Amino acid sequence: MLGAAVARIRLGCLAWSLALPWTAFAAQEGAIPHGDDSVQDAAPSATTPPASVPPPAPVAPAPTSPESPAVPPDSRQEGFLAPTADASPPSSVVVPSTTPTLEAPPVTPRVGVAPGSGSPHAVTNLEEVRKASKNPFRASILVFDQSISTQTLGIGNTPQTYMPFYQWWFSLRPRYWFTDHIYLAARFDLYKEFTNSSEGNEASSGPATDYREDDFGDLWTTLVYEQWFDKAKTRKLSVGPRFLWPVSKASQGEGIYLQAGAIATYYQKVPIHDASAPFWDDVHFRLFAWYNHPFSRATTPTNSGFMYVRENTDDQSFLSDQLAGTTLTEHQLLLNAEAGLQVTPRVDVSLDLYDINQWHYSPTSTCVTIEGGQCVPVPSTESAASGQVGDQQFVQLLWFLVEVNWDVFDQLSLGMGYYNLQNELSSLGEHRALFGANNIWWSPDARFFFDITANLDAIYDSVAHRGSAGASMKKAAQQAREENLLNLSGMHF
Image 1: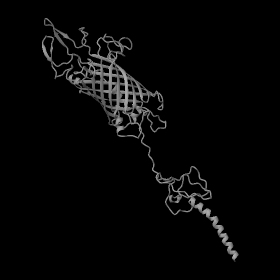
Image 2 (image 1 turned 45 degrees about the horizontal axis):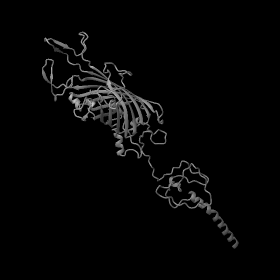
Image 3 (image 1 turned 120 degrees about the horizontal axis):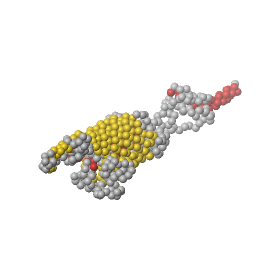
Image 4 (image 1 turned 120 degrees about the vertical axis):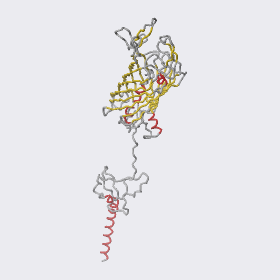
């Protein structure tokens, strides 16, 4: 019996030694529940250090698929079956993680970054920035312009009378967008001439009263409806009414109550390369028309607060408030054709030609009493029956302009160029042509200019820290360049 008892003890020790490795392996693989029923994360928390892992058991674990996600030790807490030594965990197992998810920063449009370049920004030029911006004040700008005449620089033929000209011009042009299609634009101008020419601050229609006088221009307001014709936004039509309010001293002096009219603009862009190209992005064209009609106290410039003594045809003196003998403009039609090249996402070259047509009021027909008491009629217009020629009421001006714009960054743009504004008829009574002495390219009053444009909405976004950190802010629309090019400082309506 003693031998049988010893044999039973030996068999029990052998069975226990064989069961111990399998028990450790099963506990490691999750077949035996742990004392803690909580589900552990597959990935350690970003703030909690991972728990120490006990040394592996001598028995090798079952192979798992590299594509299979990790499974919590006690998978039954989530309703899944625990893996066995001969089976891989199901690939559909999803393990919740307490690691906080970092949200991507909001994408802010930025100039000069092409799609597919590894950057989250997908905007490549300023036109795209304008389309992406939702700021209700987008395209609001402040322009500081300096201009100097060619004769001041000694360029071209010397005129009979040397008259240097150098001027500063400040222009605040806010916009407010009511919808994606309708916006209200305004324009406030301030002019200051530093020389003493007879031209003066031309936006105020003539020389200033005082040396280096500060002159305010009229207030412009335009309500615009804008519509794109295609999803790519390459063709656009803009229309709306425009009003000029008599803020300037000249308009008040001429008895103008209000100038009213309408504008229409057609814009088209023709891409040359795709958005990732660093050069020669596109060419663009624009057709612009503006009709304007002033409402005034009289057909000639008058100022009821100013009187001076004149003499009539009967050699009699009388008080008059008429400031000039030329009649005011009754109707004006301005036509513009522009062609531009987007050299790089930040550099643009444009060429403009303006045709400004003005129809003045006809003077009142009257008769002049000559010696002997005879009254000779003076016609106001040309009369074929009488053979007499009246006053010419149509005036045509040509304006040539070339400009290079560089958007240094979203908040600031620089521009420089040359323009020549003059009558279509030369001083010799000949029509101007492309070539020859009387051409449209140069005159003694032609000017070089340099302007600095501050994009106010982009500056505000920078100060208010809008957008993602380190990204360029949205740029104010360069569509307001239309107003830059349409600086009608060379004439007054």
